[in-house]
Amino acid sequence: MLKLSAFPQAYTDATELRKREEGQTMAEYAVMLSVITLAVITAIALLSTNIVNVITSVADVLPGN
Image (cartoon, rainbow, N blue to C red; front, top):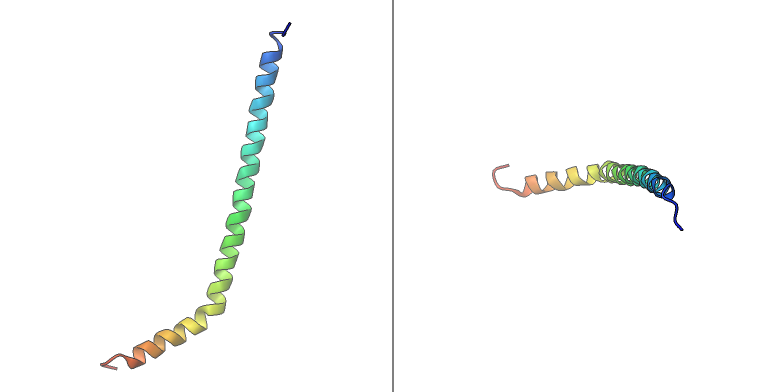
């Protein structure tokens, strides 16, 4: 026969497990966001000179300059 006292313990265990998993998920999202941010900053730093050169070249070709 199932003890009635087992239900509150099982519920508490499940609730704590869900909280740990939510915390773990938040940490994973934070790591992913950090990696993506670093990649974007690196790409901008590496490409900024080329982008300025392209914009300058286009501006030089436009009439009125």
